[in-house]
Length: 141
Image (cartoon, rainbow, N blue to C red):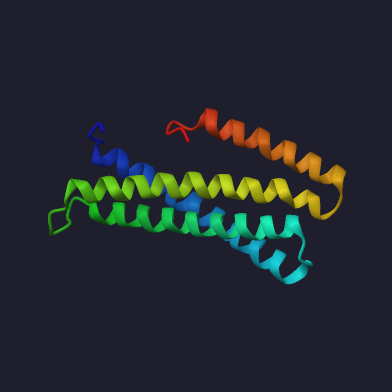
């Protein structure tokens, strides 16, 4: 792996921290809403699972990014192993990627709670968003 500049890692971690925290909150809200206000069926089970995966993955990304920001601060009084930085970097990126994609799955499944037509529309929109995410991200999937 290419050695990343600490300033770059901090900048990415700060941005992903904010985005992941926001999206994690949305995922948790969807999860609680679906669990409390719907009846059990196949699409609800899929939404619950994907929302839970999204919320947890995005929280992992938030915690990993916070730890990166703390550990890479120039006045940190202890030395940090480069392997720990790599582990946290990978956890942050994988948590964000998995969480974002899981949130899109949740969105795609949401229309199926209402009707077949709504389900097809939300699934198509979510697929377009997944394709855009895969193409637009510098990290890949």
